[in-house]
Image 1 (tube, one colour):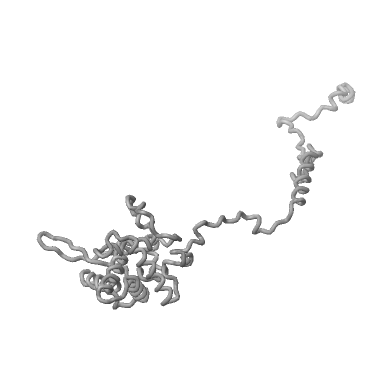
Image 2 (tube, rainbow, N blue to C red):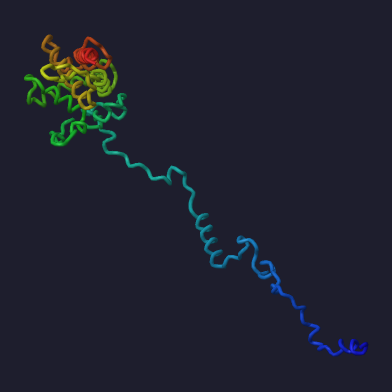
Length: 272
């Protein structure tokens, strides 16, 4: 038996010594890190070598940027084209570029754009709210033709307004268009009375005035005040209109336009 045990190791095949020991679990291949599997590629994308064509394009772009002449920032920006109406003077005498409307409610209904001759021939008359696109000076001229004294007499009304603006500038040393805008703001009522009928009874009710109507009423009252004051004195109509505009711009309650506004607002306050 001892000999058999001694002979067993010698009888084994030498090739069996290299075989791995048998096991039930499958053998997994050895894991390799990305750096070991691909040693040639860099870890960071920034280290990737750029092709020669890219380098040449970048160098060419840098050279062209350096060759460009340096210009100030003001020259690089596109310059604003000056408006042809910027230097237009009202009646050829008054600059209206600095005129402002402080009342935001009626600002869009008072056109103060530069115009030399405020006469458009009624081209906005057939459009809705077209009068808001008409110069406020032309609307004043048209308002002076509301009575029998100036009906259809556009040139006479035009000269009266021009004379009034010249007198305003001489008396106050201010822009006459700015004085007209201030007068409209002070003479425009903010509230008026309407009639509501309940059965057979009509009840007065206070309502807010639309912005377009505010401007209409202010122009109407200014023109009416100028015409009424001209009937009571020997002053020319241009001087009467100038006095009415100056008084309304200063908020004088004794003038016709501001007094009319105060009366309407007082009545509407009692009808609230």
